[in-house]
Length: 336
Image (cartoon, rainbow, N blue to C red; front, side, top):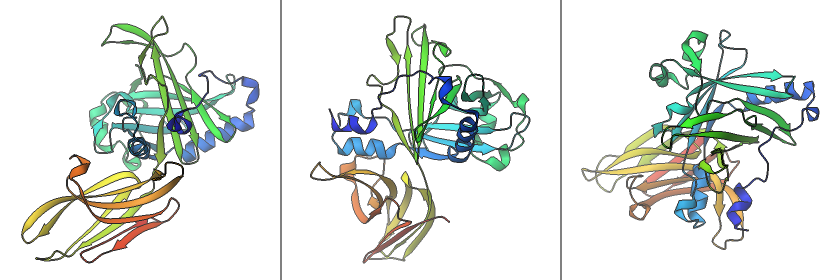
């Protein structure tokens, strides 16, 4: 088996586990865990980075996606409410309005699941600027929302599966017509949540069972839950005044752009903070690391054009990463 498949493939059918496996007490525990653990920032850049380093063919690498879940207090909408956002790329990339949704969660004792149901904003452009600001979203009204439709507009049914939580769509319940091919498709979604990881995959199939949307290999997007770090950088050029910078970053592949001035010339630079799986040079040992790296160059340029000018590496559970150099010092510390 391809080594990458051992990390991203999960051999589970997309069906709802039998009702008898989940007691009312377990369902309440699932709901409490979802409301406590799902909110936050998630990014699969560590997965994309690993696949690239592992020399996975480009057409088989997972595209980068950033997701955020914000818990809000909105009694008019429901007792348990989470607002979800998606960016097709990093958190500064294209905003995905198709998955800009308001999820309500409740125990469905008859079905033996925690039912997570989506709705959409009537005026999504109005709410996009505050999409992750719980203070401004609190008090959201039901009349601000409409029914969710489309491939992502389907209930997710959650149960506990060992140490994981598993959410799936109900078989046959999620159908939509894909405008680009004028074909009705049935969609199956699977969400797996364990520890600091959220894995998501989906499949859209036509009446003949042919896959018309989703990854051909049906492996999951492996999203890591992010932590927030406060960072400082000090630059002492060969000629000219010293510069200092202070900024915040998340640790799942966030990038912060800088402009460094040396002898009156401005040069683009950026800092990357990433916590994830690192393939060793031997190809046999794998370990999660936290890495802070500073490059001269633009992040959208070819990596071969970057020049590494600062680097720090630590264990994945460390609360800081930093370095000191002749011209450049850097430190990122976990926000308390």
